[in-house]
Amino acid sequence: MNDIDAAVPATGEELRDAILARYDSLSKRLQHVARYVLDHPEDMALQTLMVIAERSGAQPSAVVRFAKSLGFTGAGPMQKLLRESLLARNAALGYGERVHQFNASVSQSVSEKGVGALIDEFTEGDILALQNAREVIGHAGLADAVAMIREANVVHLAGMRRAFPVAAYLAYAIPQAGKPTMLIDGVGGLAFQQFRAMRPGDLLIAISYHSYAMETVSAAEAAVAAGARVLAISDSLLSPIAKLADHTLLVRESEVRGFRSLSASLCVAQALVVGLAYEKEIGAATKRQPEPADAS
Image (cartoon, rainbow, N blue to C red; front, top):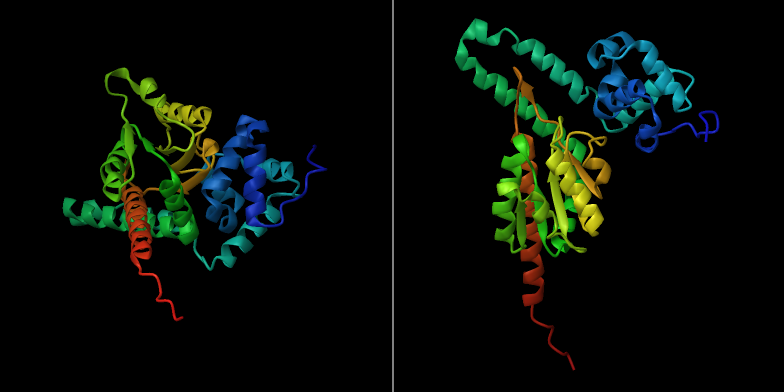
């Protein structure tokens, strides 16, 4: 199907689906733009082409070509669609713009107030990331993820490098809710042997952020090959694990002075575990309720 025949996306959801469907067929330059559109829709909706070019590292002409590849007459109609989608969610100021404003406001704080001001920078950055995680994941997104864990026979966990603390926490906490759990840690070079433990009916929770750990990508590929489901916790729908996943929880962590946090990811992990435990308790309470007396 060529660009002329392709249906022009009419909603933000259709635009996202069109980008995901066509991403692999795009040139490297247009893939770069596609990723920015998906990861920073607020910037695309609210900023000028010059600002978008500066922040994304793409030429304005590449943004225009990308919009036309999806059937739009130019970048303007695509931005209008994203802006309407943003307003429909009652988000007048997008996360990306709030982050840029935050970074500008704290850039001089340590030099002016001393090293103690770092606590302000890191907590404020984490607050923004936590708010964004709540908005992006939403009630339905978290509930769907909890259901996947509840329905799994065994939960396998893969999270390497900076994602390892999140995987380790889930490996500790999920068994507390009564679900058999295995941590894929690759100790002793045994990662591929650990992959072989995955079976149909199991679930792999794969956690990875840019730049993505190839061990975690390999675990997701092994899960798909084994017939297991995949729940991804990642920072982009175009991440290699998200493209393999049945469901993805998008988490964009804060980055302050080059150091990226894990606060939002750990918050999501806690919500998953508590949600699982809550549903287990509700189910047990329902089973304990006595049968109503026979009125006859």
